[in-house]
Image 1 (spheres, rainbow, N blue to C red):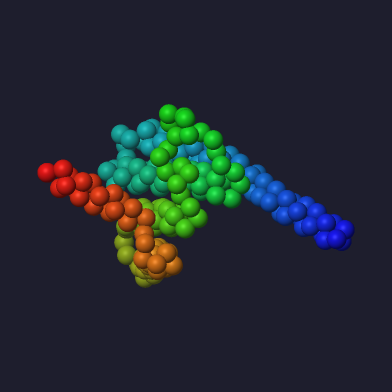
Image 2: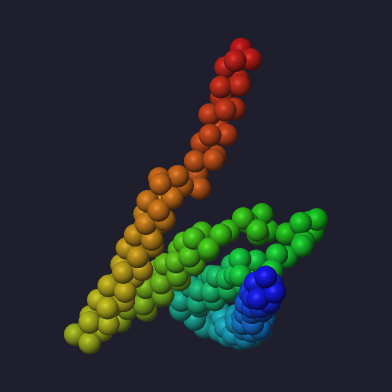
Length: 197
């Protein structure tokens, strides 16, 4: 009996230690938050460069500069999604439900939805990069043609991967996607409206 009690205490202590090990991830998310500052510095430098050369730049140069700003913004948004959702999914819940500026998606994204949002952000970033390459297209040499082909292939791989991941999540959930709750709510609203008439 005493052996069982000791074994149970050891088991509880080990489980508590394993459960506490999730805090090791906290510095990773803090590091990602610091990397947002680095991204902001790069954004400010690009914006300053775009502003100082606005009068002497061609239209395509301005569009390329703007696409760079969009690319950096999408990357920053991706980092925010990873920081907030990852921290809430793997470390601890953030108790900011009464904060007026709390994003609506905070606390509602599980690991599967996080993967989908991340992959869709990567697809958007890849599309912006591809558009930048096409906008800066000069004389088409065989080397340049090969480079563009690889960029298109990589972008298509990202798109196909995101579609396959969404399908696999839908199949794993038994065909019950995130949108079904909205459909049920809409159908219940419509049924209540018809019953009231």
